[in-house]
Image 1 (cartoon, rainbow, N blue to C red):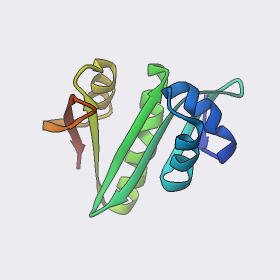
Image 2: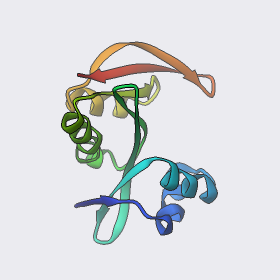
Image 3: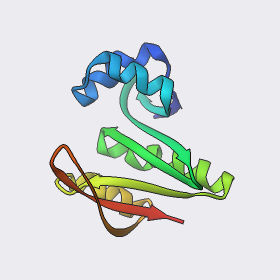
Length: 126
């Protein structure tokens, strides 16, 4: 598996992974840092994140759960290099994302905001 920076041409595959419109994913590639996981030249997952106020915020983690640890290493590595913390909001109904956060060393720091009517849990790594 290879991890690389996403490019605009990846928007179609990112859209397929998320059921989001292609234009939304194209904007994501332009507006955030996005890393994709590839196996045999096929994108199997991605992570997007941005940095503000001394914290790297993971904004999306999608794809094959086997790739989550490698993908989460990207924002964590960036945060470590910059002396920043990392936060991830995991939907409460997505245990696989919460498990990946815990396995990557994130700690549950309480409830997060609701997104599309769903409650979330905030995970943080200093």
